[in-house]
Image (cartoon, rainbow, N blue to C red; front, side, top):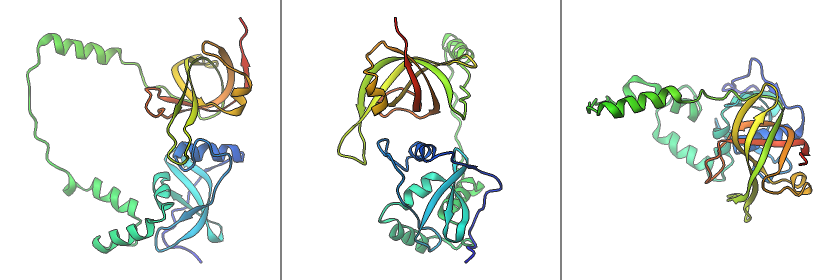
Length: 248
């Protein structure tokens, strides 16, 4: 059966391993940080309620899922996450009863269309407040000194870091909190790039090293922009490997 709503990818990246697949699903919020294996996912849009498999991705905001009969479909990870709720089918039905028909467009497409429509825009009212000259100069200086946004590599790279803190963060999918490690002086080895602070799960591999605050380590890992819950740490280190502790 060929589904009429299918948005097939022109090109996409497959996962090199189940570890990378799990890693990507954690990044999207589809799996908890403690998850060690994949779980079944369900596609509940367009009148369907079928199991699907996450087979790859087009970019960081577009997952590629495999539907029955091996059909590939592009979907936003947040939309797929919503579909996993047991009450999703009822909520989607309630929304469709009140919404106008739109050529079988999925809910996320309708939402994007509504937000981008000129009629949906609210006219802005401009209020000018004269600021003191010193305040204006201070703001301009701060803008000039603002560091450019970091371009993070997509693949695993060699890095160095110093252990700053051990802590825990809430896990809404478990009764127990997640153990994490916060690092400072994080940097890429090649090309030499200062990252600053980052965090990672306090995995069994890391625990074997019996790390202490102040320990310097080298390792290979992926680093992504993902803020730590309740902490001002903007980057996450995923699955560090080949970890070596620098001796004094």
